[in-house]
Each structure stands twice: as C-alpha cells, then as structure tokens.
Length: 253
Image 1 (tube, rainbow, N blue to C red):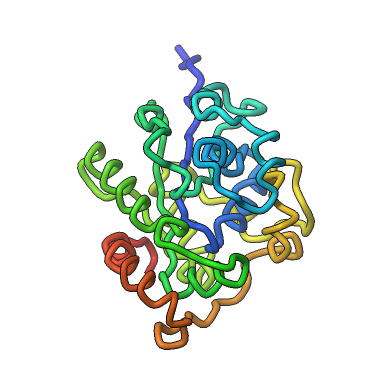
Image 2 (cartoon, helix red, strand yellow):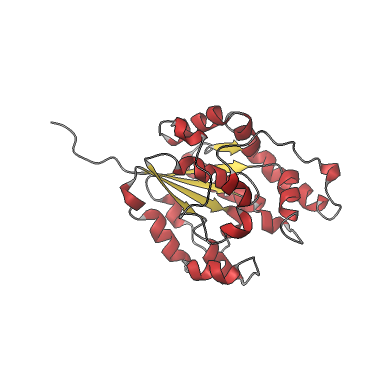
C-alpha cells in the first residue's frame, strides 16, 4: 500500500548577524517554487522589549508581531501556502533573554548559521549607524545559539560564510541544502530584481542593494583590521573568538 502520509515541512532557521548577505540568501530560497520565507520575525518584539531607537522603529512594531510568542507560533505553525520548505531569516541579536527559545526544539527545524568576519560586518554597519557595540552585531548571541543547536544535535549544525557563498554560490548552497535534507535547486542562483511582499517593512532603509540585485554578487574584498576606525577595533577584537568558533565548521570553505 502506498504511503499516504504527507512529508513534514523542513523549517530552515538561518541565524545571521546584520550586514551579511542574509537578505540575498532569503531571495535565493524564495526563488525556489517549494519554499516560503519570513523576514526577521522577532524584530518587532525585540524593539518593543528593548525600547531601542532603530530606523523606522514605530513602523516595524506596528507591522508586528510585537509579542514574541505570536512570532514563535507562526514559525512552528502551518507553513505559508503549504510549501515543503519554510526558510526563516533571523537576526541573532534579536534573541534577547526575554524571548523564549523552546520553539527552536520543535520537530522539523534545521538551525543553520550565516557568518561574516567581524571587520567586514563592522565596516558595513558603521556606514548605516553612528555607533556600533558588540551587542548590535550579534556575534556572542550567534555563538550561544550555535552551541545550543550543537548540544541538541550531538554535532555541529550547518555553518556557511557569506564570503564563501559569494565565491562559489552553487557549491556552498548545494552543501547547505544537503545538510538541511533538501535538494539543491539552480533557481536559487538568480532572481528578479525588486522588492518583495515578504520583505520586512524596514526594507526601504536597508535593502537598496539587494533590491537592485538579480543574483549573488562577486566576492567582496574583506575589510582589514587595520583599516577599521579606532572606535571599532575593540569591538572587532571582542567578536573575533565567536566568529572563529563557528568558522571552524563552515561548509564549502
């Protein structure tokens, strides 16, 4: 008798800090016909809980969900449009202590980690904000989430470096798909330019480059430590051990 049970959806929770290729990665997965995506589902709750003054703060909170429990229920509930894959773009620094993590242990989740060197993150972030702290770029939180996932798996979860993706998109995305238990789709390598309905309400402030893109760009020259502003160098030094911890497990590097 044929198996009539529907295969459960694969939920890929991709954990990144800001100023990486996280939105381009979301574009790549959204271009798969079998995949639904969500953009930074805990951002509104993070702003509501912290009171931080981010660009478009009130618009982000109003777009919600402003209660993290509602965001978690959405992430673990029915996949939009009944798709087989649910790609969830997360920012690690949003996961403050008041936001629960038990939802991460629900069946079907693959927790993956997108990393970038601290120097490159800081150089890019400083171009958008006047000041940057270690907390703003989420390296410590990313390492904590990585350790949590590794403890539950008994081995390292998938890690990819943005620089490796740009150098070999097909190779690194193929490795990521294998690790997630799904087939690689060449449609992930190119997408139409423009904004998406699934983009966060904050897109007008942050997404200019990705809105103009039609695929992954060429590899970028990495920022050197000595080229950072002196105010950023201590932040880079504090972030580096966390980056190196995860980089030791990166796929396709």
